Amino acid sequence: MSARILVVEDDDGIAELLTINLGREGMAVERCRDAESALRAIAREEPEAILLDLGLPGVDGLDLCRAVRRRSRTPILIVTSRREEEDKVRGLELGADDYVTKPFGVRELVARVKALLRRADPESPLTKMRVFGPLEIDTERKTAVLDGQPVDLTAMEYRLLELLSGAPGRVFSRGQILDQLKDDLDAPFERTIDSHLARLRRKLGDDARDPRFVDTVRGLGYRFKA
Image (cartoon, rainbow, N blue to C red; front, side, top):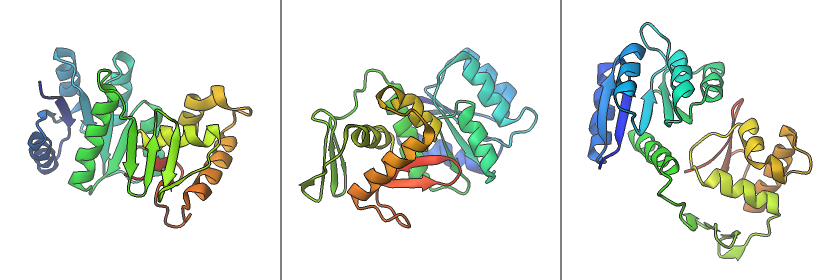
């Protein structure tokens, strides 16, 4: 059965673009123009994922995100023209899983939706081998190989690499990373995450100005580049 995607978007052109391209991937798209109709659609049938515009008429998209999170863990991808950092941070803090800013690349957006669906599907185990160009990550053996050579990682550096690479393109705040890994940290502070990530990047040969793998999203956190 195809995944059902709820698109909450008041712009007809963008809604049509999303409907066509997600439909090509075998997804069934339902479109709502405002928060009220979206809540009714969700109550009628829970979607597999929600694409949510923040600038909705009437009830704001952030308020809709909060309302959805009170009742379900349905993956939410924010699609917005708002470029202010505060809006993006608030969306993530309210429970959104990812965001893209308009104008967006259709292929990137479709890839992010697919990634959300994979993570949300308990019957779809993570692949044991992840390959990103010259970097190979073996999640069964807990090892990484770069350009054919083993990368000597500490346990925490590997845990960070596995966490970020499991959701390419998704932005993880320091707080979200800390929540995931705090049981393994001797000093469970957000700045400790920065130190471990800095060492991981050096071992991956990442140029801070143009990283191949781990990217800094200013004011939001870190993401693994798809």
